[in-house]
Image (tube, rainbow, N blue to C red):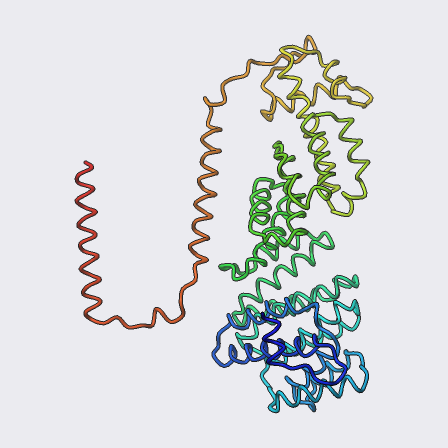
Length: 487
């Protein structure tokens, strides 16, 4: 039905142009009208909606459509119009005449709003990226950033955050990410001075990604700790921030905080962001293994993730069994995958956890076992395996990983009887962590509530105020009476 209505409202011209061209162009004009309305009314939410509608039209963007839209939105003699037109390929004269005529007949007036100009930059940049013309996309994004530095309007913040993202993306694709680090720092400083919180979020994540791309974890942590923090405005940016924070904490051996950040990032990420959730799950699996935990099997069986998480599933199985030889085999088999994911250093750290898990299984199975047998079962391939086994057992006992004693005279390990776990504080700590998680989720849900605009400005009449106060007094009296009855 929607297509029929569109065909009636916008009849197909007699010229040989596909019906998708005027349809997409009409959608872009509606989005431009939405941006214009949001700019005049100072409503950022309308601009954000326009960006979402644009992403839905991204696959339909073509050179004729963009050229016609630029004629509609920009003054022909403007600098932005000439610059953006240079990035678009020249089409057939007949097609261009039709597009120009249709756009001229439908929009005789010209829009000169800065929001529309920045929006045109965004459209052309998306088109160049989809066409894989990355060098031209770099030039276009750089020109848009220069223009943004001269604009200080809150209605541009949403469009600016998207341009910041694609600006960094173009340089990352071409391998020149280090070139824009100084410019990103300058943009973050400008966004902070202008109180552009969405821009600060986006630029902070881009800077963290820039540092982590070159393994500059200390510099990333210094920037993160000194950057101003506030309530998240974008769920996507908050998820990215949690992911980068989890990676930094993991490298700094703060596994408990890293696990919390990575799991929260995976939970908050939208279902459609499968690649991001896969990366979060890869790092969270390794962090849990480093903490001595064994991830649930359901994590590796999520829809669409089985193949990507297969190496980490086999790695988890080797750690769970405590088989050092199997661990080596898996590490060598998927070495290319681990290097691509940049998790090879973490897997090297897991060797000690594999040995500790195997030692824990041995202590549960045997009440007394010689150190020589421990070395054989752990498959230690060192020059003096008995001495290594002794040091491993001693360290495990000191760390509390194994509840046993070391008899150095008889060169054996004596295990103690396993106690009741419910006699310890562990169940209470697990229950407390679950309660804290639920309370945190409830608080975030309350903060995410949206209310109609200008409700706080509506004045309450004296009669309504008197009625509300009377109801509140009656409710308080009723609650007090119930509490007295309880006692």
